[in-house]
Image (spheres, chains in turn brown, orange):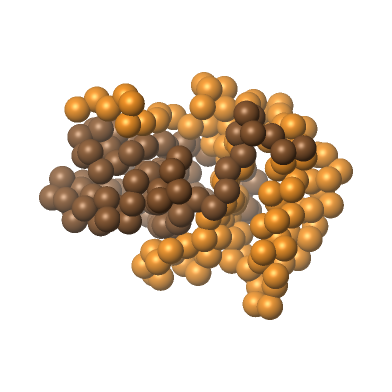
Length: 111
Length: 111
């Protein structure tokens, strides 16, 4: 994690009947193919309180080395093609872009 | 990132007039103090589309080595005390707990 990093967080609820595996594999393939993507992580909810989770079931986080790399990714034809399929598969979504402000790892414990 | 890791993601919109710096520092202090917390990251939105961001402005991500560590953190008196202050400071929140399913780093590029 470098100081110029930017993260693109996508929280979604998929429509019923959608092949989620296909979507996840598509995103993995996209993240692997496009060099602008520095890191990719996804996760499925493992039991947050329903009230606090508000129906969201999957999270995807993409890390970029700079805002420029994120822009290059966003406008890449392969991303645009995938984004069309993705948006058609979801019931609701929240997108949140940020620069990580602080990290603790077990190697740099302060206390 | 080990295979047993669990992440606790909190997306918030703070109330107006709140000292956000105080809250962030409080969470940093808590994450540093409690050994159950393996990693801590926070970020402020840097300009996602308002429609897709839905008013959320800050994200906090805590990483734990196991669900048991997360439970120990959740029920720790220092966390409970902080959680009270935190919940009083926010207008809305989404909490999402997951086990990371896949990671790409620049060292293990597939393409």
